[in-house]
Length: 371
Ligand SMILES: CC(C)(COP(=O)(O)OP(=O)(O)OC[C@H]1O[C@@H](n2cnc3c(N)ncnc32)[C@H](O)[C@@H]1OP(=O)(O)O)[C@@H](O)C(=O)NCCC(=O)NCCS
Image (cartoon, rainbow, N blue to C red):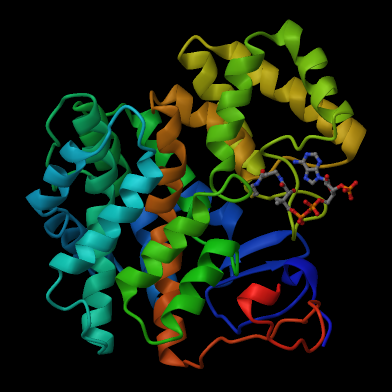
């Protein structure tokens, strides 16, 4: 038995949900470029959960269900108020809150497909209220209930900022949600599948996935990109800062990918949005700095940007606090996690690989006073 480090190249599941083939990402066979240009996030949620695009009435029904289920038990907001709000990371708060949502869901352990689908809706609906509610509570504000007449993307920004967003903000945020919705067997999705393959419940699967997404090698990278841009401060500092990191053999967040070789197809959409939005908000230097970093990394390391690089300046332009970038990733990716969880349940087998043992050979127990 020989281990493959990081399971690189290992095919660990069959899936009908999304695919990465020759650097092209598709959801159920639809190119991500096509969906980003045309679909609402709700349509994509339906697509991932039903493996087909919705008809008009089906989309209306899902949209209605998401709006109707967006309320969050007050106990969760009360919990937030007890947290050390100056220091707690919103991903830690989110991880705990999703676990708590499971505590309050009477159907949490009902494993019927119907109950699991209802939980999927509840989770997708509530997670936006949880993330925005946490942000507001730590700013000393009360959470805002969603407006049923707004779509998912618009509602998120509304619940966060307390005012209805502009059309261009809704468009950009919707695209970002579409782009982050699913991504084959990425680390957090694999985590979710491993968890529920024990026949554990949906909330456990998503809680586990949030834990995996939190790390800076996965979803946490977008926040780190913004931290880097803030540290660099101005375009004149880009060269020395990046060169210093490269000379120290440090990783530059937002670059590289386990699967893509020519480039992450999601990055170009975010780059376009970043250029547009940073101009609009009077911070074009953020985009210019990003492009300069990008050209240096591509030029010297041959590593293209991934989804996290330009999403940082997009979210910043939407007035989103930097440590909410990864929770927003989780809000979108919940759709993919849940799709994979339902797919796993539908054809389940325990996921239990082996380890290559590289420790000492057989040893005889030595009594403690003889060691
Ligand atoms: C995404 C990532 C984890 C993929 O990791 P991986 O497939 O295990 O690749 P490795 O970490 O083994 O990297 C392979 C080589 O490329 C280099 N490399 C990879 N990503 C790099 C980056 N962002 N900056 C600088 N060098 C990088 C590594 O240092 C390594 O070089 P070496 O062979 O000389 O040691 C990795 O590219 C990374 O850490 N990127 C930064 C974090 C990030 O943006 N994550 C979000 C992913 S969507």
